[in-house]
Amino acid sequence: MSKKIYLSPSNQRNNTYATGNTNEMAQCDKIANATATALKRCGFEVKVGKSGDTMQNRCNESDKFNADIHMPIHTNAYNGKVTGGTRIFCLNSNGRKAAEAVLKSLGSISPGTADSVSYQTGLYEINVPRALTVYVECEFHDTKTGSDWIRNNTTKIGEAICKGLCNYFGVTYKSQSTSKEKVLDSQGYKKGQKSDGILAIKELLLIAKSKGIIKSGMDENGSFGNGTEKAVNEVLKIGGYKQNGIAGDNFIKYLTKLIRK
Image (cartoon, rainbow, N blue to C red; front, side, top):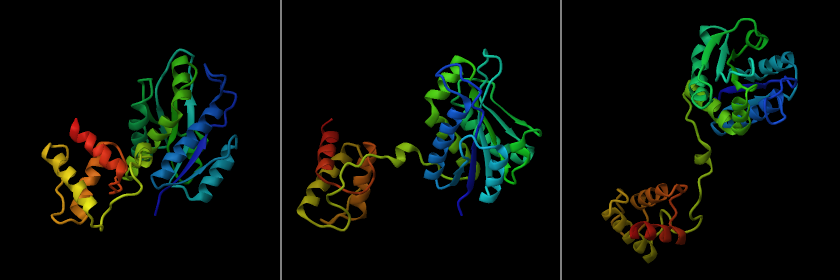
């Protein structure tokens, strides 16, 4: 069963950013949506609190959702001079492991260096939800450095939060690049087929193997079997293409180019 994450972006529209004519609520809504996109891609069930809604409504909604993690998403501020990094809050030691997993991922990309996990007992969204709360303060928005970084890295922030939760739950993180791999050929020769055209492709694959471009062997007969499919996918992987096991006209052109280098 997939884990449930409730995202509660800040409703603090009066907290203005140092740059960009924006505010904490607007930016945290964007971060929450980016986080939700990444989490869903990785198999989590996600619910995002309505923009500007009250903390009370968010907590009630989180409880009805039966969230495993309740995650408020905020950005921080101090005195307009300190870009302080990522701060993660939790109630007690029960939430520390999850908080540290998110800190490790998000803190490594935020510009500030004073990253930390700390216990907070006075925050409403830490005390009230039934779920374990991981309260994220992404970076300090009241400096130019922090404000510019938050505004320009919404997707990266969401991906980092997702990666931290994946690490905590032992879930495989699926990156954007993995989910959006280029397809070299959607039609062509594939496993189970047998023809003279496949023999020609296998000759090219053997040349590629002799040159050290690939390591996989091919099937001995004229069929497109497991060995040939493995070799084709190895070539596709080199080019960053989706490993769909299809060898069409574009595949032949690409493999020929690799051999001639």
